Image 1 (spheres, rainbow, N blue to C red):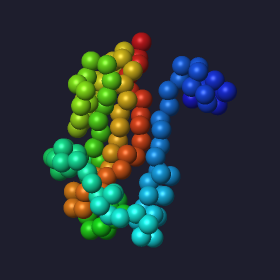
Image 2: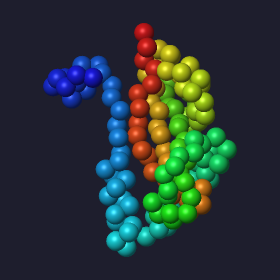
Image 3: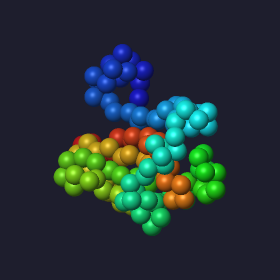
Length: 131
């Protein structure tokens, strides 16, 4: 990706990754300071927890909230000709197949703790759009 004015504004047709790490840090800070109750951040949907347990990618990052277990990453892909609920991607082969499609898709990488139900959107990555 270039850093031209068009690229920064998204008007040159380029698509870039959106990283949510700063929002994550701010949220964790608010919880630790007692400004945000746990029930507002430990609210993962049951389907996300199921996906994290069964097909999530294990990380070596401790949960920043409960500090008892390592986080798991779950990736959902949304876009044309996929179900409205998106598609949970569990293998590199499956992601490669989606990336080779001509449709422009977006992959949402979410971290989840299966112990305390913490979850946070880490990044949104453009997938597909290959001509």
